[in-house]
Image 1 (cartoon, rainbow, N blue to C red):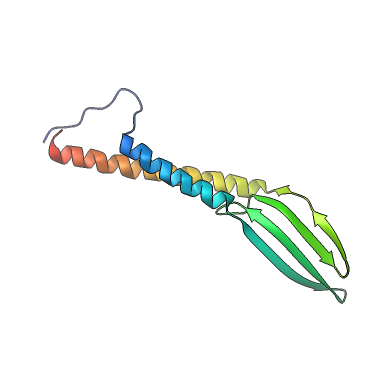
Image 2 (cartoon, rainbow, N blue to C red):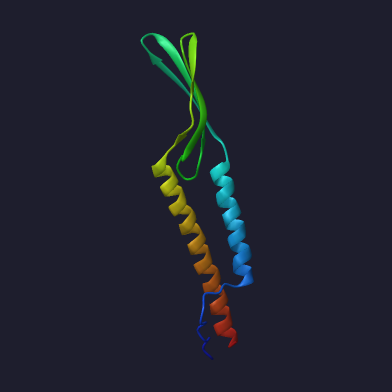
Length: 117
């Protein structure tokens, strides 16, 4: 059984790049998929309805719009960024991509070592 020589620079295999593109596409889809929220609140004897649309995975990172109705009056809620959600989403995406890269490259190296290439 021969050993696989170390490469002098960072390289990935084409099959790993294709798998990473699919994983990145899934991460992007999960982050731009709408999570709509409708809450019914009661306070001071008047019902309130809050409708909001959130984006982000695994945590909400952005609220695009919302509408708050209290009794017969209503106000629009503006867009809002959630910096904790952005950080968690970025770390989750990086973790998924790096673990996918590691597993794909490990499988390729293991197969090459068995074949003796």
